[in-house]
Image 1 (cartoon, rainbow, N blue to C red):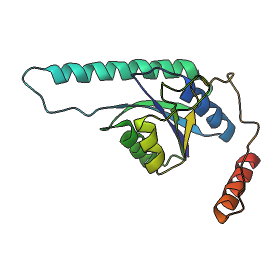
Image 2 (cartoon, helix red, strand yellow):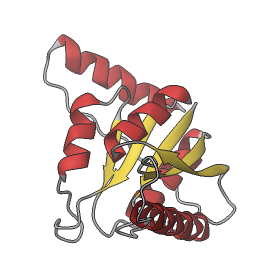
Image 3 (cartoon, rainbow, N blue to C red):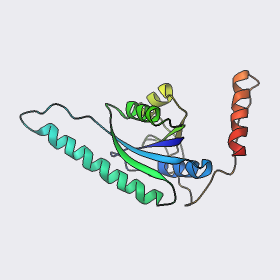
Image 4 (cartoon, rainbow, N blue to C red):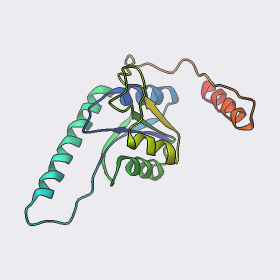
Length: 174
């Protein structure tokens, strides 16, 4: 099982990479670092679409290079561009295709430092994801090699929260 981490070519942030890296190290899983890019349109006479496509691919390549530099070589990771009409659809499809156990994204850029804010894509991702989603707070950083050292779960007394506690116990044991 792997962790899919979405990186946004429009907003180069390392927060999601730091969180995903720590989770991957802690669970012994690999990362799939994905820059979602729009699919190509049929060719037009003016060539503007080809220029836009080239620009988005170059931005995605640069973002993936940045991601590799942030993660270093300490984690098994695959870096790829994935074509989809939206980040949400791309991350969902990729998670399903690769049988990922988790999707990690960063907070929306309007979040205060250390906090989470949902943008349109992350909100849609949370509501329709086939797997759990983790959102890194804005500016989140950990030391290279960091691992999860504590798991906290809130118990409400319902059957659903009992499952959560059992899940938290399983994560803690691993």
